[in-house]
Image 1 (cartoon, rainbow, N blue to C red):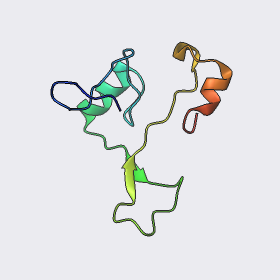
Image 2 (image 1 turned 180 degrees about the vertical axis):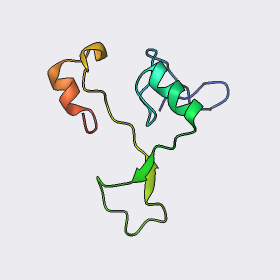
Image 3 (image 1 turned 135 degrees about the vertical axis):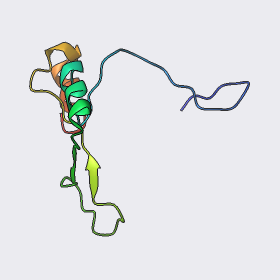
Image 4 (image 1 turned 90 degrees about the vertical axis):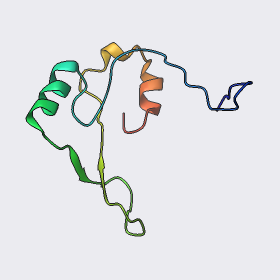
Length: 82
């Protein structure tokens, strides 16, 4: 990860806008979940958590329509659980 030459702290690069979160992948669904106080944590089911202390997570899933992602089919295939 690139670091700042003056502080040595990791740098963050924002490459776009928008969100994919466990609460939804668009503004309306995310805000609706927040207002309703809904939790979106569930059991982790895509790897073994037996030896871990934590067994739940807020797991974000990609929306069914990924045409806005501007990724090639190959790039989309390489994304985690895409």
